[in-house]
Length: 182
Ligand SMILES: [Zn+2]
Image: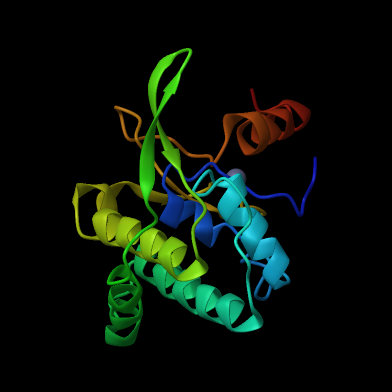
């Protein structure tokens, strides 16, 4: 179904989307969507957090994965002190600078090239806002058992079941159709 290795941005927030850089977590650890430092740089750009891939080192990648897994465990309801400390340590980094640009559509915020520590600072600060506020109660896991990505359910009823209607939602509909359960 599409590009399995491709990044997923159905989470609604940068910190939630960052946890989706591990796919199929249900499958014995899942698989990495950021297998190397360059892929991590591409993720930041694809996420719209910076206009160009930041230079990434192997140490950056290790730190990013450490933060990502701490955020993931906390989003799943964990409260481990070391995970909280990891998020807080990164949240203390100043986030990237954003500037105002005049565009044909009016004024728009534009990110400027940023370093990995500042981008991880942004992700961590976003995690603090999600985990420490009312959105924490809206974190869901996709109902497709072969997906299990996390997302923030911002629907009014709070009854969204899939990371994406276009992929996992339609897949379930198709299966119900095939099994005659309509
Ligand atoms: Zn899904």
